[in-house]
Length: 158
Image (cartoon, rainbow, N blue to C red; front, side, top):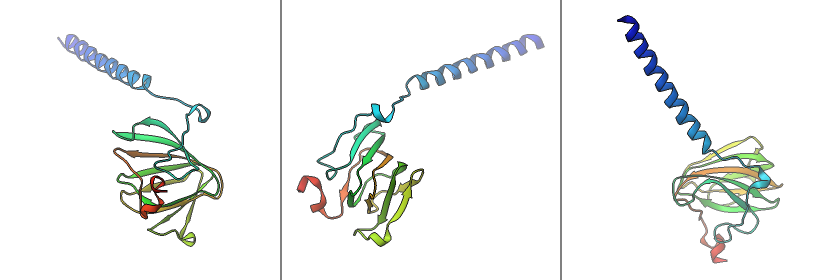
C-alpha cells in the first residue's frame, strides 16, 4: 500500500512539474528580443519637442504596462513636466541630467550616467537636460501622458 501511495505522489509531483515547465516555456515563447538597430525609432511631434526619438519596445501607451527605448541628442532640454504614472528610467549610454521642480535650474541638476536608475513618482514635476547623445529605457503604465508645467512648452501649442 505504501508503494502505491508513493507512486501516486511521485506521479502527481511529476505532472505538476510538467505543467510548470510547459507554462514557463509558453511564457518564454512570447518574449521579444531586439537589438538597438532593429528597433523602429520615431519622433512624437504632438508630445515631445523636436529631437528625441522613441521606440515602443513592449506594451501600449493606452493600456497596461509599457517599455520604450529613447534616444536623445546632445543639447536637448525637456521642459518641466510630470506624468500621471510612475516612471522608471534606466540610462543605457550617455548622461541624463535631471532636476526636480517647476522651473529649470541648471545648478540643481543631478547627473545620471550609464547604469543609473531613476524612479519618478506620478505628478511630480521634473526636467531633463542632455549634454551628450543619450539612450535610456523608460517604463510606465497606461494611460500615460506628458503634462507640461507651462502649457506653452507643449509641442502641440507651438
